[in-house]
Every structure is written in C-alpha cells, then in structure tokens.
Length: 309
Image 1: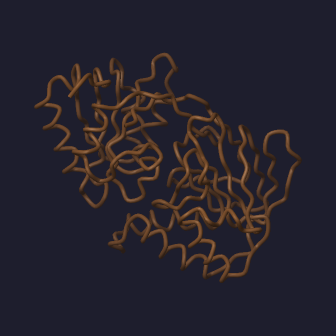
Image 2: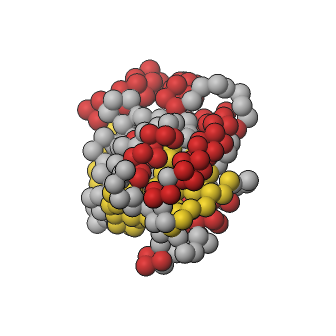
C-alpha cells in the first residue's frame, strides 16, 4: 500500500447522500480503515444527522491530521467551511470520498465518483497539495458560485432531489432543470460588477458563474481553463441576452466548454470582485442558496491542503 498521508483521521459522512448510498459508502470506509490499520494512525467515523453538522464537526475536529468528507458537494462545502473557520496552522488536510449527484469538486481533483473503494485507494496512495478556495460574503466555496439562471437551475436540482420528485442525477438532472428554466426566459438581473482594477461593467445577468475548478452541474465545463492552484478565480458571464433558442444551445455547448466561442459570453480571471444587483438574484454557492444584493468575492490562495490522486 505504501505510506498513507492520512495520520489521525476523522471521516465525516452524510448517510443520505446519493439517495442513501452514502450510508453504504460510510460502512465500507469503516470496514476498510478497521481492516488496514496502517492506512491511518487512528480513525473515527461520524455520520451527519442534520444541516451544518459537517461544518461544526470539521471546525471542532481537534487532534486530527486529516478530515475526510464522504458525500456530495453539499457535505464537502460544509466541511471546507468548517476547516476554513480554523487558524491556518491548526487546519487538518482535506480528503473527499465523492458520493453525490453533481460531484464537480471531485472532477476537479480527479477523484473516482460514487465508488468508495476506488476513492479510498486513491486517498491512501495520494499526495497533499495546497488548493485555493473562493469566498463570498464570508462563505467559502470549493467549486462554484453562480447567479441568475445558472443559480436557478442549480437550486431547482437541489429542490427536486430533496423532494424526491426525480430519479435523475448529475448531468441529466441539470439538463432537464436547465431546459425548463431557460425555456421560461428572463430579462436578466441587472448587475454592476467590477473585477480587480478593471472598469465597472453593467451586465444583464443571466449566466454568471465564478469557478475554482472547471465544471458545475455534474460536468458542464463552464470555465474550462479554471485551475485551483493558480491563485485566481475564473468567471463566465453573459454580455448580452440571447434568444431563448440560443440560451438552450448555450446550455448544450457548455457541456463540453464550446460556449466560450460565443459572442454572448465573456471569460476572465480575477482575485477580487464586487457585484451589486438592482434586485435580489437567484444565487447559489456549491449548491447552497445565498441571499443578498451586494456580494464581495475573493480568492484565498493555498487555503486548504487537499489529498489528490
């Protein structure tokens, strides 16, 4: 097996992730760590019971070298926020065992998706690298912050999963929500935005995604060149409002990052941005709803030490 980077390890697992498969994944990880004693110095596994459990557990995980987040993007988001609430010199390293529907942070890291045995194998053979996170109005994100119809789609997929009104997941779930919401159309949410020292721009926001890694929505390459090691955030936003058919076409093109050739969108990198909306827009951060009209967005370089394959 080689030398594991884990040390003293806390596993924070969401048993309800991916329609209950999180519980099976947690049971496998417990059996693996019990059986392979050299994988960790010591280990403990805790199942979350309610919202914010993972964040609180990560914040209070004293005496651990590693915190492993088992579940979807939501539990990873909570664990990352809990770790970021700690002093940098007292912050355990992060590993993820992706058991979710979207799994976009897992794609950024190159982790095996919804396969705990392979993901654990990657972790115990992995190496630690410092990665950036984003921060918006004091909330940290590991992958995505979005506004407008992007956010409306993401929030709709979360609602449909929570209400168990669909058996779809990942890309398929995002596409069906996207078709419905894009078909309804929108005049956009007017936003005044400033990126670093660039002049302020006024945008008719429909598409506005800030990325740490390349994808959102279960693999849509909205910012295909986004790199979590470069110390910058990437953003893709629309500069004009296309027709409804072209909006739907953009959704399809974004699956492979081909939307970047459209004159309707612009992409750039930044370290600090401010956004002021005339009315409250749909907004989501790693799949969690965020309310407001004024947003301060920053990158925090090398914020988390993350175990990657």
